[in-house]
Image 1 (cartoon, rainbow, N blue to C red):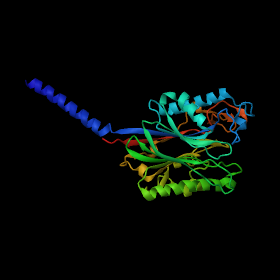
Image 2 (cartoon, rainbow, N blue to C red; image 1 turned 180 degrees about the vertical axis):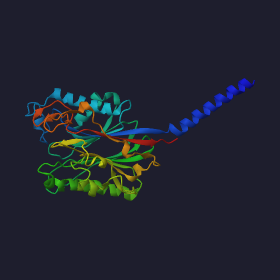
Image 3 (tube, rainbow, N blue to C red; image 1 turned 30 degrees about the horizontal axis):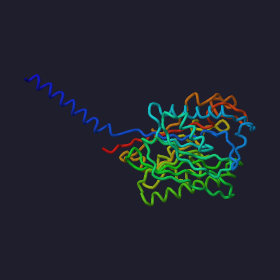
Length: 346
């Protein structure tokens, strides 16, 4: 009899431990976000409203359907590798030409993941846009819109994509996907264009904070500026994490790479982070329903995404084109990703 009581007591304690363990720990889930400039992902169809001729079959770059399919496969390989066993929840993409590119990517190359996407055609003269892929089980869109950027020279440029959604049925996340104007013509000569784009982002951030000071906000993409540049550091207000976090402020999680020989883009032999994650203070609070940290922010620099840099030594991104020459690689940028911890509702 005593032996039976001992066995029942042991089983009872084991069950209690199991319930406590699951109650305490099984309520947290990872939510992974990728930001990736995929370098000129053009379809093979002529858009008469844009200047896409060089990326058409018979064009000067020799673009064709075979290369288009290879580009799809390359993007899918990167996303799958970063995700591992779990599909990344959100993927911000830069340099996407069209809805067709996104449809083919999600319905064929990434078919097993069952991604949906948010995309708007922008007025960019080359026809390249930003887009947001999302995994429906992990992210439920509530609202989205393109944010128009008016440049000082009135030249049409790509929109900023804004989306708001529910993360794992727990809390709301505000997402901005950016691809700021390039440095074509020189950094200083083109800086006012990036300042204009940054001002649009900051205006919308302020409107969110005015309604919800503890909002979860993430700004990501290719800023064509580095963390210390004015558009990012001052206009958007992406501070380094060594400053004391406070509400309604934004923090640049890539600032740690400043003055280090590591980054997402290599220019004249030097690595730098044109691709960045900038987050609101509430996302850095471990007591928030959704939160992250500096340690959860990464550059995905797999060896197969790079090739030897014979000019400047070391390695460089294994890109699709080098000038006008087809190189068969992935992109001139390395992707970045961030993990959010989500405390699920009981």
